[in-house]
Amino acid sequence: MAQVDLSGRVALVTGAASGIGAACARALSAAGARVVLVDRDERVHGVAADLGGASEGRVVDLTDLPRLAELEVCADILVNNAGVQHVAPVEEFPPEMFHRMLTLMVEAPFLLVRRLLPGMYERGWGRIVHISSVHGLRASAYKSAYVTAKHGVEGLSKVLALEGGPRGVTSNTVCPAYVRTPLVENQIAAQAATHGIPESEVVEKIMLTEPAIKRLIEPAEVAEAVLYLCSGAASFVNGTSLVLDGGWTAR
Image 1 (cartoon, rainbow, N blue to C red):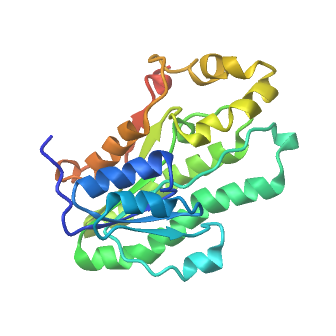
Image 2 (cartoon, rainbow, N blue to C red; image 1 turned 45 degrees about the vertical axis):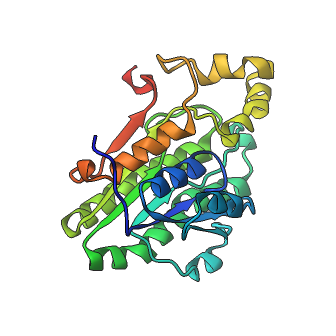
């Protein structure tokens, strides 16, 4: 694939203080885009500073919907990445956590898209990429909110693809298996407790049982998929799910 040139484009990346979001911000910046990094974590300023140029970090809690509605931003590229995880059986799953997770991973992306689409339509060009998951295509026990949210994002992306495609705006998802990020590392203890196994066995016995390729994915690999979806080579890729699951869904 030819080198991706996003000079003159503005990209908004959520959950950009670490992990996949930070990797996406770096990849888009390296391709020439000015990146607006959003996260509730103050470290987002450091990531933005490392990018240099006109990129900026903003501390925003995306579950604060009134604050989100006031967010002043204009972008050609939106990467919906922010997410959290909670592992528990349905009968023990806190309703307030279920609500928070769907707010963050479904409602906030909808509101951001709603804010940015008019500008994308006016310019006749836009790229919306949702960081979904293999759990947007398959289910796992003890992850009711996460699986529900990711399935919801898959549906939202397809609707956006149908509405935006004729007007120059594509919408796609990227669906990785377990990625080496703080989100994954932080759920090891909960997975161990829920499944009744030592923490040292979680990666092998829980996270790597389904993929044929027995390793975690690196954030930079996900970022390369996002960059591809923003490239000219992917101009006809719309309404699809780019699956990076090591063969999980081939079963």
